[in-house]
Amino acid sequence: MSKVLQNAVKTEAGVEVNGIPVQPIVEKCSGCDRICEFEGQQFCASYPIPAKKWTSGKCNFATHVKVEVAAKAKVNPLKASKRAAKGH
Image 1 (spheres, one colour):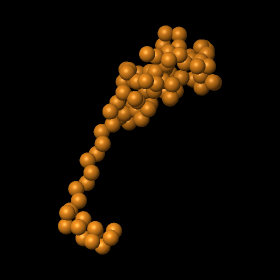
Image 2 (cartoon, rainbow, N blue to C red):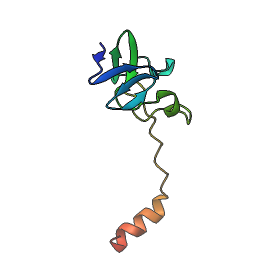
Image 3 (tube, helix red, strand yellow):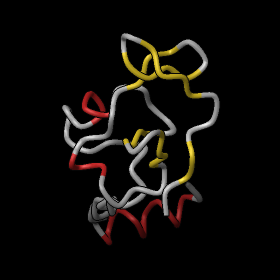
Image 4 (cartoon, one colour):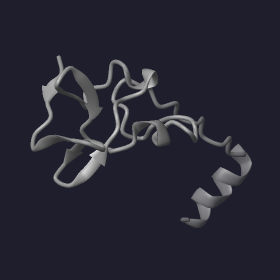
């Protein structure tokens, strides 16, 4: 369910929130919890230009994207036991 965008004003240049112009969300934003609605359009509540956040891969504000955790590096058991014996 979308929230309503607070302090939004429609101007000739587009929609502004507190004097900052905002752009509508892109398709990749669909399903995010940060989406707000204003006059039938959907906007991001966290970032004014959502398309820019997706240029480097994933948007760091996206609540609907699962983050992949990299596997831990393998530790050589012999070195680990020596470190433990030294107290490091």
